[in-house]
Image (cartoon, rainbow, N blue to C red; front, side, top):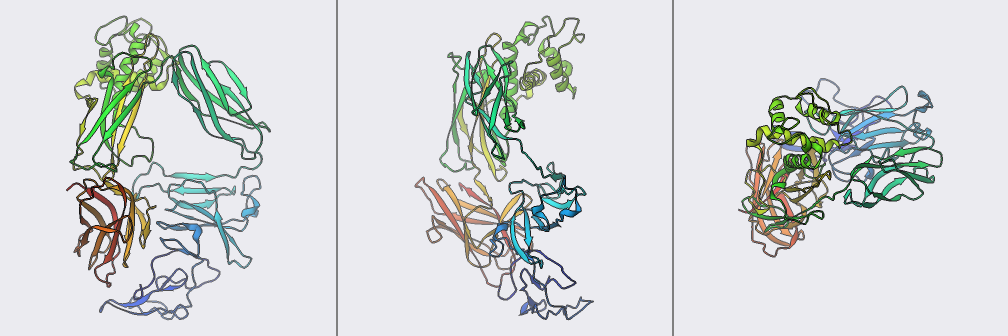
Amino acid sequence: MDTRGPRGYDEVNQARKAGFFGWPLFVGNNYAYHEFDYATGKSGPAFDPAHPVNNSRNNTGLVDLPPAQPAYIWYPYANSPDFPQVGTGGRNAMAGPVYYIDLFPKETRLPDYYNGKLIIYDWIRGWIKAVTMLPNGDFDKMEPFFEHIKLSNCIDMEVGPDGKLYLLEYGTGWFQKNADAGLSRIDYASGNRAPKITAVQVEKRTGSLPFNGKATVDAKDPDNDNITYSWNLGNGTKKETSVPELDFSYTTAGDYKLSVTVKDSHGDSTVSDAVELYAGNETPVVNIQLNSSNKTFYLPGKPVNYSVNITDKNDTSKIDPANLFVSVDYVVGFGKERLVTGTELETAPITGKVLTQTLDCKSCHKENEKSIGPSFMQVAQKYAKDPKATGYLSEKITKGGSGVWGETMMSAHPSLPQSDINQIVQWILSLSNQANTKKSLPQSGSITPPANIEPGAALVLSASYTDKGGNNIKALTGRNIAVLNSNTVMFTGAEKANGYVTYKLNDVTYMIVPREQAWFALDNIDLSGVASVNMMMGWQAPPQYGYDFEMRLDAPDGTVVGSGALPPPGKQKFGMVTIKLQPVTDGKPHTVYILSKVKDVKETATAGIGYVQFNAK
């Protein structure tokens, strides 16, 4: 601001000698703040970097300070014209070491290229940069170091006596025990490099006999050497190919693990993860259809209709409703990692039961009657309160044994996949607690999202169907999900904006409201059925004057469809802005622009918008 000073910057400073490096009178490239009289609330002249004066009544040191030294590297939340390589977003500049190769063993140190380079990193943006300096120490250039590394908020970096870089990762959550916190090390691997395998793919993972399919591997050699492929079908058959694909065939029912070894011309090789296949049955296909009045998100209180359709290639008889499970969950952070839905967990007992009827389990056990072995109900009751039951029963199924229920030997099942064993055990243990088992939704129906859903939680409708298998032909379960986005839109930091910047705090990205008129945009928004918009706002010091907002369609100067305001909030730490909307009934997706300006140019507080919520009322 003209009367207060520059926006915030993070700095990396270089101290060639003792000196004054600016803060809190200057920031960045000696951008000056103004003197401020807290008694009158008036700003004075800007501080002079050539003759800085500290006349604070709390000062116990020098009044006339040495000339201010500008930062070596500096950048704000927004794009930096001086150092564009650093990107945008939250900022936590961290300075690592200057790397000198003569201090470390040649066998383990970084390449000579990094001699004399400064390593810097940013805690929240997640990058590491190598800075090249001119002979006199001035800045020359900046470039990525380990460009595609994924860090969980690196908070410290040291060079070990071996010349390797050691990183301390804080983890992605603030002030909590983070599972992704840890100590990491970056090694430089010289010489020939083994091929890298990205993925092994198959057309389908299950099929009726004969099960014919094609496998492909995505592999590259970092040194561009010629590579060959050795395929292991998991049934004793191995095949060599010079191309990254294989036509395979299985003629005997069972579970198989297909893998491939990729070897370069120097003999270095990499083995892929195994792909689990099943020959003898094909997984049923589950399709879900959602019908909502709004195509972008659900609206609490407004029904969402759904239907589930099943196609079972191996069983043309009527679908068995008892083997279908449908449920709805509201999931925060959907898409960030693999989703294990409530349906998947609840389906396990259904799948486990059918598996016992298609495998050899039925020869010795019945659900409620004793046979050669105990009934599954007896097993459930015996181990109902045993916290180690799952592991014990899983091992029993794998290894077999006798002596617990009599002298009859229980067969071992060493080739049965652990996923199948887990489902069988979950079904057995569920028999002792059937009253609390979650019930399935019907195959088609209507869901009305409640009003108390956590902001940002997507509606995830899950469905699974377990087919009937056959005699020694394993039953298979098909699953699918359908998703409606939350009516609460959380920011990603990639939104189109003019004047707004983003700041991430405790895993929430805020849009920082500037004091000048500005806007940000949200793409692909269907406003059908939307009557109002709420915006949650937060701040450290409460705004003294407040802000005005309006919403426009498809352009910053487009049609105004609503307006609202944040009045001075008093001493509250959070506030809610409500924008009442005119009906938009065209059913088309729009880019909505939210414009803002302060009610008074004297506003000094900084506020952020945490989310935008679209409402039916």
